[in-house]
Image 1 (cartoon, rainbow, N blue to C red):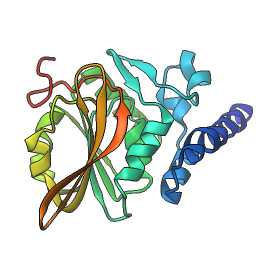
Image 2: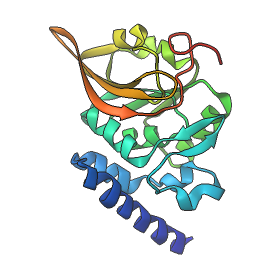
Image 3: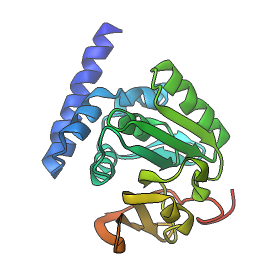
Image 4: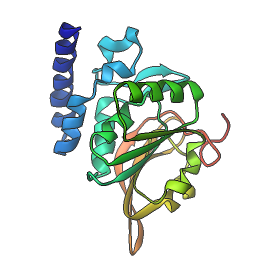
Length: 219
């Protein structure tokens, strides 16, 4: 196991250097979190040796763990502080929430698929991520009783930005969400200030579809 630890630590360092820093990610807190969190433990044993490769991987339930660079890009765009409360829509493997938890005060994460919810909660408990709060629910509705949030991250592609989530974004809050059709999306960053909601594009991306009442609907 010690040899495995050294092996994966080396793969993480190479991932950060070659995939993330090389593409312009500069936030020291994001880079430190990506170097620390054991990404290989958030995928199946059969895929562990591919965990630090430059692409997404399947995690079951027709879902994926995002490409490392995309995780870093979205996290950096949230401009997190140590006192921030973050809402994540789509827990998936739990990896993105783990990265967020290394930087923010508390992470609230919602997953619609029960198996993924259970697996992620087990990992959070095992790794003692005590500042991650989980919910098994329709994430497109957000988590109103815990709002407003300093940051919101949506890890699935939406046909449009859910008004329910915008309403739960606090003053000065940031949201990152992929918006488009079922095949390609534009990664959008929103910022709320006294003048209203401002949007900028972070570029093209491809995510699985956001399922729920204010997403693509269905299960």
